[in-house]
Amino acid sequence: MTAKLTIADYPLAETRSDKIRGQRGRSLDDITLDAVVAGGVTMEDLRITPQALADQAEISRAAGRPTLALNFERAAELVGVPQDFIMSSYEMLRPGRAKSKEQLLDVAKAFRQTYKAELMAEFIEEAAAIYERRGLFTYRF
Image (cartoon, rainbow, N blue to C red; front, side, top):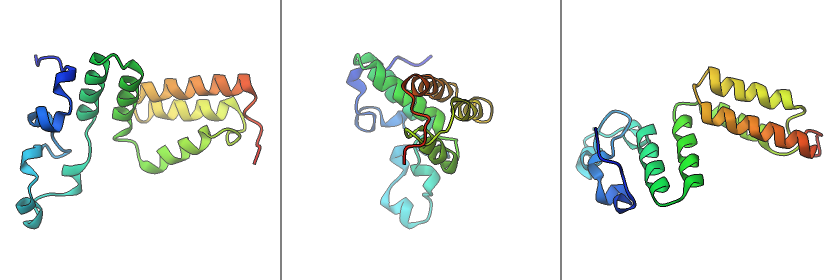
């Protein structure tokens, strides 16, 4: 079991670079100019991982920032979600874009079932309830 991260571990790149790994498992220390020039570094090595975001959430929670921690946890769920689905979901969340609560609930269902993104599904379900209460389903633009 690894030790819990604390605010003393922030920023991870400087204090715990050993914890930072890219999608292919390369460490931060492996990403050098020589490795880039040699073609040994790909975009997968530079993309953030769910674990890095979870680590940031842990530090945020330790710093007394639970809302920021939850945002990092939701972001960790989004790492494997296709960008076009994220962008269409974002568009649906803009007031006046979704025509009904059911449209947002369908988006939440897709996050939950297709992408195993429970926190994102809960976020969208909460938004659907608030939009319904505030009358934001009428197309306004």
